[in-house]
Each structure stands twice: as C-alpha cells, then as structure tokens.
Length: 328
Image 1 (cartoon, rainbow, N blue to C red):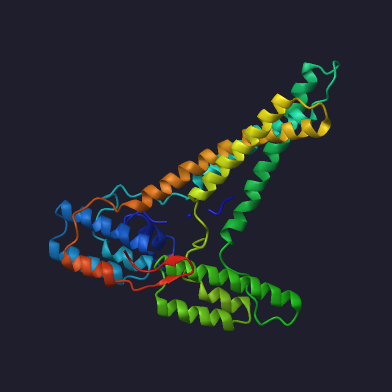
Image 2 (spheres, helix red, strand yellow; image 1 turned 30 degrees about the vertical axis):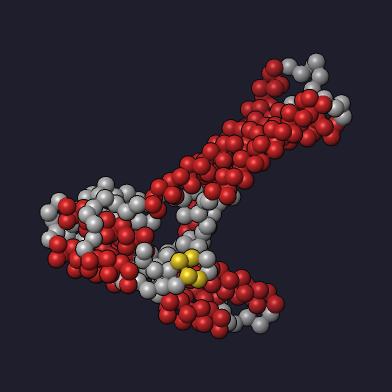
C-alpha cells in the first residue's frame, strides 16, 4: 500500500527546513523549479528586475542544499506564491485506510462474530458491536502512538562501530547497503546528487563494511525520498479487484449455492466491495494531485534565453535507476 511521496517555494520548505536544522539537506529538481516559480512571481510584481531574475535563476540551479535555496529568496516575502507545506503523496490513501479501519473493518468483524439463531437479542448485538469497535479503536490509538518514534528514526541506519563478522551482521549490512543504494538512486533522479556524486557514493556503498559507513552516505539526504509515489497502476488494480469482487458476488447471487464455501466466498467478496473502493478513491485523489503538482510550474513570465540555457545545462544528469536526472 503506501509508500508513500517537501517543499513549497522558498517561502516554505527551504526556509522551514533551515529553521528545523535541515538546511544542509540536498534539494531536488522540484525544489529548484518551485523556487524559480517564486522568483517569477517576484519579477511580475516588480520585486526583481530582469537581470536580477536571470542572476538568481543561475544561483538556483547552482544550489545544492535547502539552505542555499533559502538564501536566493531570503529578501522575498514567504507568502508570495501562496506557499504551503508539500502534501504527503499518499495522504488521501492513508485517510481512506483510517476510515476503513475505524468504521468498516470493525463492522465486518462484529457481523461475523454475532451469534446466529432466534435467541440473539438486540442488546447482545449492540454490546458485541460496541466491544469490537472499542478494541479496534484502542489498538488503532496504540499503533499511532507506537509508530511515532519509528517515524523519527526511520531514516538513519543503526550505527555499528565495526564491520560484523557473523552471518547476522553481514545480513544487516547487506540490507542497509540495498537501502542506501535505492536512496542515492532516488537522489540522483530527483536532482539532489550529480552524476559524479552518485558514482562516488555508489562506489563507497559497495565498499562499505558497516552500517555507520553507509549512514554517512545519506546523512545529507531527506528521509523517505526513495518511497514510491502513488501511480495510475494502483488505481487500475483497485478497480479490477472491485469489479472482480462484484462479479463473484453477482454470480453467487444468481447461482445461489447452498454450502459453506460459497457462503464464505460471498462474505469475502462483500467485504472486498466495502473495503477496496474506498481505498481506490483515495488513490484516485492522490494520483490526480501527483499529476497536477508535477505538470506545471507556479505562474510567471517565460524565462529569458539565459534562463533557458541554465534550465537545460544547469543540473547535468542522466537516466539511471528508472529516473531522469537533470532539470527539465
């Protein structure tokens, strides 16, 4: 399910990152493009001259960190472009999952646990249903509280002072190396690393013998940049599963088999129809927002020839690991 997919112009992410002590983290192509959108808006409003715009665009594409991007627009109002914190790419899907867990899943479990027969009273049904919902909600709160420390420590790898010699240590280092490799590949695709920096870090990752060495390779990269954003294929999968469940349920209704396997299959198909469409709706919202946010830059005048030149050559890169490196 998730994996979920942080900037909103210089008035937001670079400055906010610097304020949180994260100014040294590497910026991406999207971050640079949004800062350029802020500069364009400042030019339209007369806050910058054409020469200043061109000079700052050059500085944007030369910037490697959030702190450097923040310096480019330090004298421009933070709310110039209506900047806001970047939206979690999986936000709508996560909301739909919470709704499922808090409302629909306990209802399904309570329905399955209700004893049948004519002697079952309404009071017993209500009591059982309330108990099931209470258990699910308490567990949900516990999981939310327990997951907070994990989120804060999700990025860094557990440090080890020396290379392990046992099979367990070797496995830990191998898993950590794979995680670091995915992270630096994502950093290259997003423009946070140049090709030379990527090649150097990839070689260091291959030669690393401890998680402490591997942790140092991603210390200046934001946590979670390798997470996969929602895609149209996820929506298609949800639609196909929903249609399949509807087809199975319709076939059972028409056929009307009188056996326990058919009854269990009907319950499973019904539960799928209750759960999957809600999650799919969240995926649709997330995918549409992903496309919308990546399609256009913030409004502003067309760049000059100098700006065009910088855009094409300011951040060199190549296609690697399924991503495109280089500012387009």
